[in-house]
Length: 427
Image 1 (cartoon, rainbow, N blue to C red):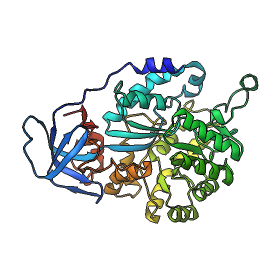
Image 2: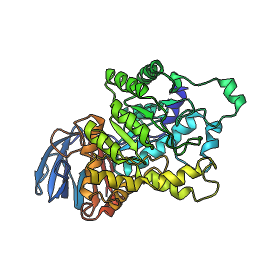
Image 3: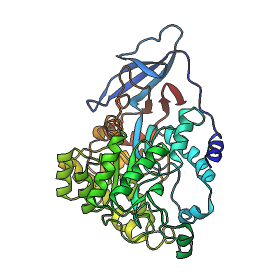
Image 4: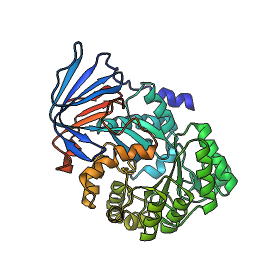
């Protein structure tokens, strides 16, 4: 199976890394640490790293080449902390799981990854999908183009919970296959929880994702009921720490969020029914919030279309999806730490930047929204070599016409993308 996936992923090749130094002339530069837009700056890049960042327009060194980004703002490459590159929702999504092979999903993922990168997202955290670790490796080897991937692999769920892969199966099929266990990412005890994390380590995951409550798109009735005990989540978090993993918790309902925060997860994803009490807990524990407003709005809109979702899903999509943007605004006002994520794979890949616009509509300042996808996202990932435009950091640089701090709609116009010093798009 892995060999087939590798063959599928060999469909594209990435651009070659330029040997000579590159000088970028930016009309504006976003200071992600301070959250403000600066004037003209010159950035020099060599061997995949930023060498210098200097104010003004400075001529390139001998033998180097210059890229003129006049009229454009340069920003650190964005990070989307919640994507699913192996899929994209549609009216046929539920039946495709029975008709498509892993190779089909791998080939689709290559295209989705390319769209995501060219939209300005040089890194993503893929929170659930068996294709993602293989796609990550192919991108790292330069076989295909795409963002840097921090992959969760299979999400960890409980029996019948969101991310139980057998939800919706008929009794005959379930009997033939048997109940899924920790290897398949389904747990029902503290020991199971530890085994599931260790299996993710064995599978090569970079991060752990649990589904602490029901979900919108799973083939099950509840979208917000808690689905882990506190002890089970604690076992996940403690075992994850043994392997240097952070833990992201999908959660819509209040009780599931409380348990996840108290147990020590790094981030709450979606957070639809987040109460004032949950917000206070998150501030006390230093928990990050990744709202995924895009996904909420997308499913709420699609719930109005007969046949797009199964009937068991439509009520959840209508009720839960519409609330996420409001919750994000309340969380911002309350002082909860917010990082950027879309849950793309629910909505169309490549349209990730629209989340910035939805964040600003919710009352979050544009500069903070941009920080959420740069320096804040790097903090959530636990890395210190990206998210800012500074000497020594990765040369993940994007540019777009206009000033997104003054007009957030400018985020939709990315026309220059560099990742690790490679240029993938240029005006």
